[in-house]
Image (cartoon, rainbow, N blue to C red; front, side, top):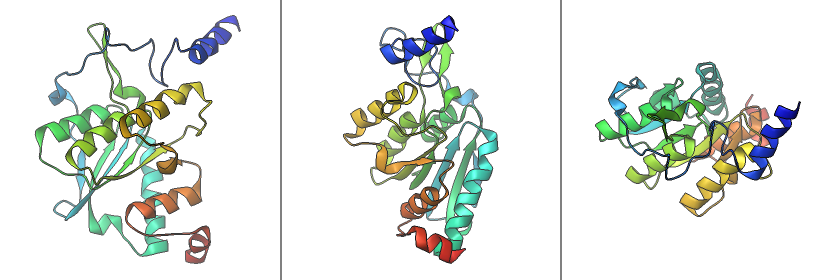
Length: 215
């Protein structure tokens, strides 16, 4: 019990940062680059379309969630992402590192993105130092090539500025983008919000009433 209390205290007082970090990351123990070529390629669905969507999540089981969201959006709006878009499916533990590999080795421009926020396996211990590749880092990577990127963060973590495990990511996003993450945050269990914000990515305005009328 005392060990549990200490862990909570460490998170609250800043001795731990983020969901996946096992010790504080500072300029002294952070590494910026590694060999990305060793990480898996990202699966491409429906290549050759004019617009592209990146779906990135470190949990393999999460693919069913994203597939269901896109199918629900099709029911409500008529927009079929699986027919209209080239989809880059990065649903595996090292997806954040593979996203960097994709952008480093190709000239691909991603138009839309559905990004898991924490990507806990995207933080690698390299010779005693850390390489950080969470969802906020992936977002920054994509916007460097396309400043018109439309993105949402899809996560199983509750949105609360008082959540010590998540405060790190909220602050990091705000620092990099000069805006709050709240408007593009989606909880994986919130059916209506998932459909509304995903439809919004593709330019559709959807209400809760539309969702249930469409179903």
